[in-house]
Image (cartoon, rainbow, N blue to C red):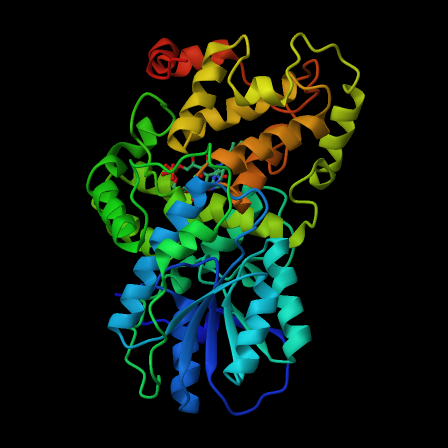
Length: 451
Ligand SMILES: Cc1cc2nc3c(=O)[nH]c(=O)nc-3n(C[C@H](O)[C@H](O)[C@H](O)COP(=O)(O)OP(=O)(O)OC[C@H]3O[C@@H](n4cnc5c(N)ncnc54)[C@H](O)[C@@H]3O)c2cc1C
């Protein structure tokens, strides 16, 4: 049995500020759960040691660019569960609507907050919000990595160029970081609870592409996430090494939406997989994706400011793509043809329809899908833009470091190496329809997703 973890190990002072007496706030953002949340645990510990109240705040921007009804629906259902859980523990939860740094700063002023704790994200919008709140309030902002098992800034101090180098670093220290979660002890001085959130009013207030409808097959929230983890570990994990790359089988965990919205702690998922009685090859294959690949994505976004454009690609990839920029494209499609799955390739169209209808394309096909967008677009910049736009509009796990890296890996060789020369791709790894036919029952997959 590993030792109980100290949340302070996962915290760092993001911005120093004037310390003064007053309540502590946990500004919940990326990790939308009560269970197994190092940031919440850290905020509670700070409040306890200072003998002050602790409040949880979620700042919601109803005009968040590109957000869809599908994503809002998942997010709000998860937050409603967070609120109910916190209320049951006598802990206040506030939902603030508006421009996040502004509403957060107003809240800090109103409640005379002394210190802000927030969960870590490497993405620029959250880092900009944090900087803005710190500048307006002058408060210290502490960030806690509740999303990675090893805090991203400790796992590596620089951008890693391949999974190989990152895996070595991570594996050396991982056991020490897979410590047990302490329980969330009640706080002495929480004060009166705020009025309950009117979730129907919030749902009405959020904008979002109505055409992108919510999904029903995957219920949101920490309880559903824990249930899916339990069922995956008891079932498909056993054969994961053999079945994960077959889009006709339900061989993967489907945990990515929960991990993206923070309904599930990756640390908890890794503990569960680590303790499962399954063949080593399956356990290790799953931990490779869940831990090494996922945390490598945070590493890329943390240290590469161009994580969502071709400017972030490695030099060898930029060079080879530039050399092939003028190559003739056999097929060219615009945004609309891609979005409405009107290409000549029925496998590509079926994968696109799976994503549009369910909010989750199978992981193996995501690589094929993105690489074909490169092959059928006038430039790599266009291909990158189209792939990310569609990914972030339809995937429930979109707008995630994994997505930024997935697209950059497929189109721009990020974390990959040069392969054989091909038109358009240069030495970027290529995937073909024929190759897919050798791996899984392509016709069956196409038949499942008719136009
Ligand atoms: C073009 C492209 C776009 C992608 N877009 C996203 C995205 O928007 N959001 C997202 O979470 N993932 C994305 N991925 C990575 C991967 O495809 C998904 O994480 C995976 O398919 C999710 O399904 P699952 O939870 O059933 O995976 P499982 O196979 O059960 O894996 C378990 C977990 O490991 C992590 N993981 C799995 N594969 C990868 C990977 N290749 N890189 C990093 N982490 C991984 C995920 O957190 C996943 O939930 C993308 C990959 C590509 C090639």
